[in-house]
Image (cartoon, rainbow, N blue to C red; front, side):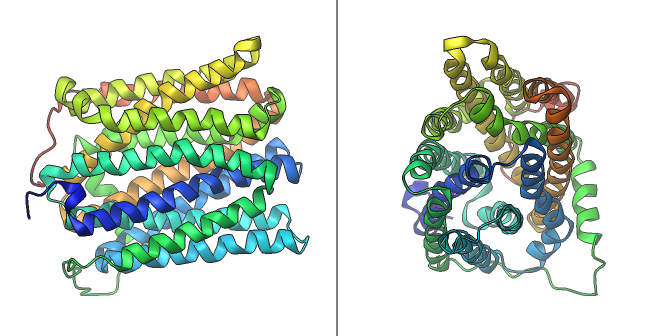
Length: 414
């Protein structure tokens, strides 16, 4: 490995650009699909809950099999294929809208297919990065990735809100299809040879890879609490995602463009989070930094349901939740992924990542379906209070474990 700055490493730069382009467009789709459902198709809370579940469910399905596939094959072709699948699926949305044939069922299908391809992409991406970057620089590499993702968080939601009002959401989604194509081109141009995949010696059972990933994560006393936190956060995050859009658009009465700007504030915070992750881990130790960031991010989500009682300060309350939640939430992601990449052997990273995807995604499906039902039963604001309380409690699992005392990401895997 060379000692050049990461941004001067040509292959890392291509991976970085590919992710940046697709991340920006992905934000348009993430906000565009539920906006389209609420404003264009008059979706109910239960339908939004189902939409959120369908956006999370494929994460569970990918986790059941994708980890083993990623560890048994070269990762870069998987990344390119995932980009092409997402582009193809998203092109159907504006086409159906142009033909006046768009229905909530097609939105459901698109959300599920794109989420599935994205889950496979994420598993392969996290396993692929250590082949381009030495382990001692993983935190730096993940911070750079998170920084550009934060820039996408700033521009994507704001652009989604504006495009929804100018072009309508279906045609805004078309922009994302182009970004996935661009991402595939940059990935295809990476020149570094990828290490040969582990040879297949026998026919493997469908869930064997997932079981291996779960066993690997659960068997490590530092990785185990992160897996537990992912499960609890996924559950209550699913409730939150099912309720947020309809709360902002219907309960608070925000216009899509205004909501897009509010969410874009989270992008500014996400950029800050990518920058503070390493200083936090240096000052507190990586374990305490993860726990402390989780507590702050979870507690800040309480500002969202409180916005309904804030009068003219409602938007300020939402912005506050975005600033605190996204900054410390990104810090958790950067440090958790970097720590996992540093602790788990290269040959198990795909299956371990799949275990996190499956458990987090599975709990998010339960949370999203329950969130839609809960919002119709006790009201959207009350359901958001339940979600925020659970998110604030999740980091306590890490606080009560050896993770709290773990200080440094190892330069080589165990």
